[in-house]
Amino acid sequence: MKVWGSVSLVVALLLVGCGDSTSPSAPERDAGTQVDAGTQVDAGTDAGVTDDAGTPDSGVAEGLPCEKTQGVCAGAKRAWVDGAYEAVCTARSYGADYEASEARCDGLDNDCDGVTDPTTWADAAPMQWAPDDKWADSLAVAGGFLFVSSDGLAAIQLLRFDASLTLQGSATLPLSPTPIRVSGAQLVRTPRGPALFYAVVYSEPNYHTQVHYLQLDEQGAPIGSAEGKVLLDGPSTWVNVHVAPSLDGERLAVVWTWDLAGAREVRGMVVDPAGQVLVQPRVLHRSDSLDLSEAEVLALADGGFLVKANENRAGSFDDTRVWLRRHDRELLSLGDERIFIVKYSVLPRLILTAPMEEGGVGEPTMLYRESQGLTPRFLQVRALFSDGAPEVLTSTTRSQTPEFAAIMTSRGLQLAWLSVLFVDNPPPGGNSSFAFEGRLWGRSPSGVVTDWTPGPAPIPLHAAANWVRLHELPGHQLGAFILTATDTPRSYTLRSLRYCAP
Image 1 (cartoon, rainbow, N blue to C red):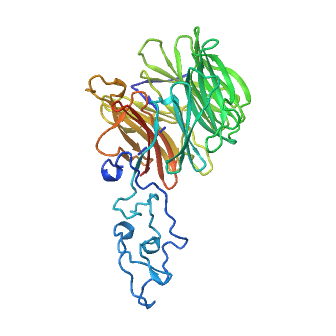
Image 2 (tube, rainbow, N blue to C red):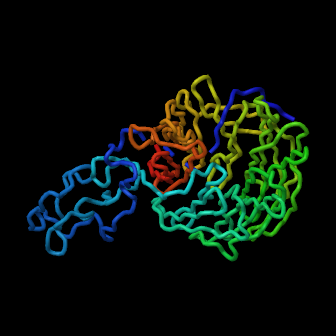
Image 3 (tube, rainbow, N blue to C red):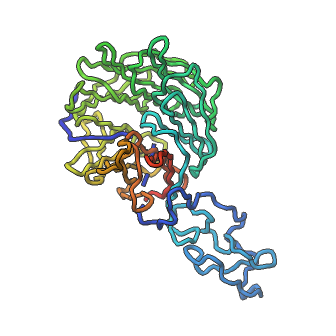
């Protein structure tokens, strides 16, 4: 066993982003108003090419100046098209770099509004409550994204967004029999399409938890029964079920923690894309004295999986032990385990680094937030089983707790986080769960840190829902989902952000 020495660390886990809070201007990023939705108006197949535009050689007088005069439209004259000048200038007049709705992230003001590569904040959908990190997930699908959440009781809601993060539809999955609550939901990609894993708790005949596997189409509609396949059925003490498809998509590892009658274990099983069990549940790790939580699994290049869990002493604020071990495709252990000693309540994330060559697969790395005095910072540990040491990625906002998301994009690691602050003087009689606010930040692969908050005022947040969901979009854009919440009036709003990452 290899043990890493004590690291001063507190990570608040989080599905989501990275510009300057002063750009674009406040009116153009007014909360709830979508700017530059990212849908380019087709200007014709010969956009940017004029037909006998007025030139000395054509014998036609030069056209008058166009309406738009900023950005790529500067100096544009009306094009001669089909025997007349354009009444309203289009890309024929403005040129090939023009976009009616800017979305290229090319460092140009393509829509000629005076703002280069603008961010887009929008109210994506109203929500019924504030789902925490285990109850909210998102996944890229054909033509857009799916977002899943629980209403906290007995229902599962699926939202469908297009590629510009605009809501296209919603559906509620009927659950029969009706559970007393939904305790977790996760979306994954399989060779058969999207799939949903969800955990529900029933009170009859005795309190117990079931984990279901449900195949979906690209629109988020269930294929077959909404119940799907029941993979697990056991005591309601199960927590933190997590799923990871193998890199070839042919297997899905399911891991969870078990803490019942003194048995403290990490267990796992393997199913195929149809939900058929390939490897029956087995014990992956056992602790005699420490509680286990935050089970996580990551697919590896060799077809196997990396499994992680946190170990804490019950009722204590002592340091947390982060346990890691590699397993083969059958979830049989490989090599030595590794344990990192970190501060209490740490929620580190596993991710594959960018591959060194085209078509290659990256190596596993662990990301986490560390409390460095009053200023937290993000770190990563690579070479997890070769004595890899923590590397500082960036510092965050002083005296604020960052909740973060991370994805590996075609250009490298992208981080997004909400720096969260408790409001010292909430309104009298108000619900303290709403006494939080924050700002959304991002770090690009090149190390550029940007405040993406829409305006000078902080974002109103809920104590249970400070997560970010982050996705790579076409054209070097990133998309993010976050939840905002207010007590008066009582509201919960899923918000979307699109931005050009540096």
